[in-house]
Image (cartoon, rainbow, N blue to C red; front, side, top):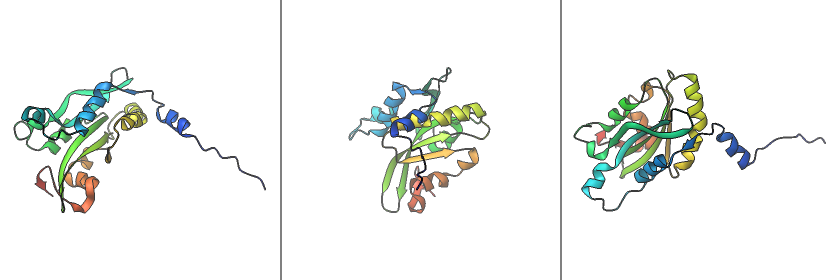
Length: 185
């Protein structure tokens, strides 16, 4: 009996392929993620206000690093003052014609309990240049590997996928979610 030669790549080969873009995640991005992920048991009011509700990440101009997208963040201290609806504000921060990565700290309620979870979002609008979509897609695993413990991932290809908060609620827990950011669904 003839045996077929099949190639099954090792984990090392798979990781090399995943890192094909060669893009690195900066320490600043990792620090922001860790700050968003780890919540202090008794934060003081100032710490609470500086906590990030949402933030965007982009590629550096030389396309070698994933960096913070300057000024593209929502702080918990902004809620109720300069930001009334954090979800809609977040949607408006996304560039209509380019890709981004984002972290969104979703506050929601299920039929049983209140929850907060980080959502990793890969924003790749159909209107983005093909080169941008290819580089962001091939670099996505680099940032995801640094964001250990993310429960929810969402790839979004246009504003029509974001316009309704029900879509995010579906990602967080489907029909068991009854409110998102304090607003009933």
